[in-house]
Image 1: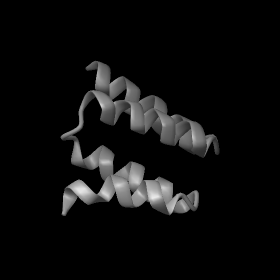
Image 2 (image 1 turned 90 degrees about the horizontal axis):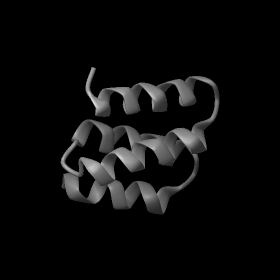
Image 3 (image 1 turned 45 degrees about the horizontal axis):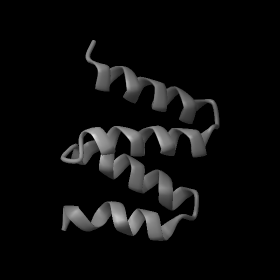
Length: 65
């Protein structure tokens, strides 16, 4: 399993445990290492919206458009 896959798994587990802020931080850390990962970018943006962090979600979605 690659390093990124392990980190995604960690973020998913944090989300499942209800630790949404920590999950978002992990997704953002993954994006710093892999800025072209659109799947993680979309997941992070969705999570940011659910946490009412609309500015962060807009920043994340901008590069997709």
